Image 1 (cartoon, rainbow, N blue to C red):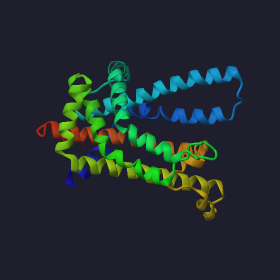
Image 2 (cartoon, helix red, strand yellow; image 1 turned 180 degrees about the vertical axis):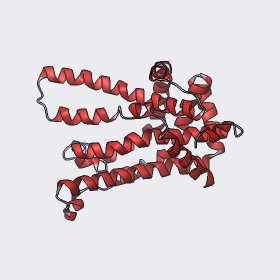
Image 3 (spheres, rainbow, N blue to C red; image 1 turned 135 degrees about the vertical axis):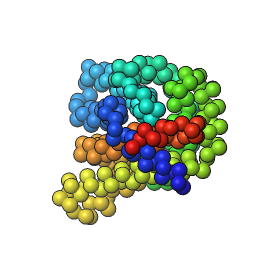
Length: 270
């Protein structure tokens, strides 16, 4: 447990000393804000076409975050200063490999995904409604979060392909499974708890702090009823903006320590 707290402390301290990382971590919130805007507009054909184009642009921006945030966290932790332009160049260079890893991750988790879809589709309305049971089950893959971050950071460190990076990531992960699994699960629970608190804060504020309003909220999955609520998206978005670089910094700290215990990077995070 000592290493769990060490990595969390290092990650927390390091994210506040970086400026560019916040720009990249804030990009996914644009997708959620756009969904709210889109829901309030008409459904004409020209607008649908424009919305489709914007959706593709926002999806591309999400990959900018997926590569840019861990790249900036990695560079900071090894004492390398990089600009926004250099980070965008890294996004262009490594995005293909990250997309490939995303496809492999989806294939590995596909049985779980299909099960969640099967139990979550309402037979009467034919809509997708994630049950609390499904939400809890979806926490289980979080124990492998380190494997994802280790693979991605291996691209940056060695400029390897997917297979070599995944081999190294897996060897490090299985050698330190206990600590890394606890880290992944802990962070997932913390983020889920923050979303629940964001949902409660939203309904309390909008109901004039009527405590009975919380009874109508799905605590485990507040997105069910609040995914188009601007206040909830903003409150929850603040947590997402912080959580994304925090998670990356925590696992990259673990990667650096386990890859080379003699690396003096720990001295740089003060």
